[in-house]
Image (tube, rainbow, N blue to C red):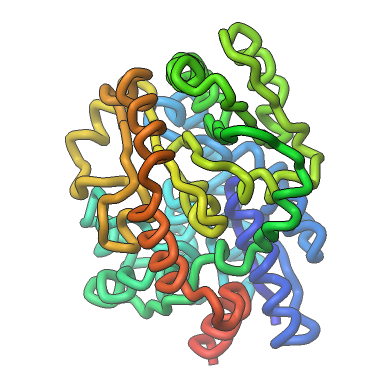
Length: 372
């Protein structure tokens, strides 16, 4: 069996690697081709080019790289048509992956699977109908997504969110950090553009928290791609801050130990929920992306914990609202009254499949079952 996979960023690489491991368990001898990062390569993929070329987010950010991305789209489609795999699995990154799938379907009968349903419940709902023309099967992370995909004409399975399979630090591991006082986790994003836009505002917000809570200490976990930039950007903060080395094994323990977190919007809210850490979400985009997306947004919250739990307990400050003063007030309030958030986080984990079969194995099983 031959499987062609395409992942465009770190989160997709993680999903892809786990899916590959699941496929190898259920289908010994499976062969892989495509594009992926270090995790997928460790599972046996020889990437056709560096996945980092595809790690672009936001409408304004894509424009300068449009020509190069278009060439890669053609290259991938031609490779798939030539090698004739049993299935093409595209992982997230819809602006790139779905264009590849469209070209493939126009010239072949290759079965196409897209892992991570597009957020048609949030904006651009017509994407579901458009992708149905060239996607056969969708693997959904959220339980409310299959009816939307099926209504558009695609097969869809809810396979669970990978966050429920991630190891969570124990209370003992958190206590071993010997961190005294109030611990505030600060998470300004995993992309350079996010870090550049958010660190000054996050710094001003935590300075106001520190003024009211002198015992607070501020911890910033980072990834290798933004570690140096984060250290550079926080050097001007008026409060002491600890920037964790991306190689540290203490990240999960800090997530568990933290009393509250200030985080950029994204799946990090689910990581915090898994650790039971109350949070405040804040995010801003490039001005052009902000204008366009704000006009198209269909939901009143972008925080995944709020959406999955069907509550609005996690405060968020998006776009123009991403300002230090209200963010600081929300952090202090979350510290004083964490109960509602904790209930919403527990419900979120339950609905995402906590306690069941690992999502990646469910995804692999769904791919094989529909293929047969």
